[in-house]
Length: 376
Image (cartoon, rainbow, N blue to C red; front, top):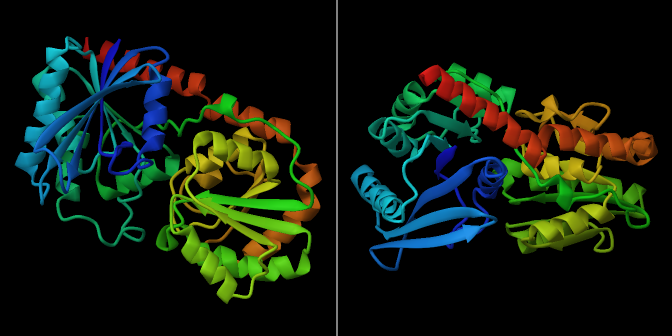
């Protein structure tokens, strides 16, 4: 089949990592189908409209950059259409399906295009935005736009059961089929960790979302009683700020190490040295980094939020309540004692079976076939 992929989030020169999990989903689907990606970005400076074409891991990508101070609907539509025309001019059309990732805000453009060219619309959703308790700053047009897209979608594929439930409670009626995040499991392996005991945290380092301060306060307690243990904290966020915060908490510099944005290869190497992956988020769906950690055979300590509990069971780690730092402290001590009991091979096999590229590719292939059969 020939699939036109669109997305509200995607790596670009504006933000190199935003939507990298969307790109991985698309690359998995491209194992079985011909895929072309169309994504648009509002820039603060540059040419008025610029199409940048590339082929990445066998996928043709059309990134359309536009210079506008505000991203009004008619402007977004103009930019989207500019990219669509370029795809047509290059001979990629027609398509069998339009598949959009992250409904708001550009899903309405994908839905209109699917209707115009008379093909089904498939939607994949990753965002926690539908939960009012999580996102009190929901955009004014979120419900209106999301309902219109959901009404036109043949199927919506949230990355977790929890997200599907949240979307239904938000009022988005549709045919739901949960398909989790994907990871290149071949890029990870089970390795001998570094001496001592190493905990690892990788994220955007955003306090509101990831609760980094809670991890540090817990570590201030744990590190004093576990002298040979280390905590590595990093990602595409303000790691120098958190280094200063750790110092202000009087956390020993020998017990904690901070690092910046990592390539996929660097993430894999850091996981090879770790014993356990730690996440203490206030909200989530199914973070890719947890799936990556499982691919390396790492047991997980995580707050019980979003769809994490659907996969992190007692065989694969420990769950604590969000904000409960005493529970996080206890889990870190318990992990040190119980770590030898975890079957790292089985953790990795679970990741391959549920999140591997071939598994996710087959899931979407089944969705596409059912959608097209129904249309006929």
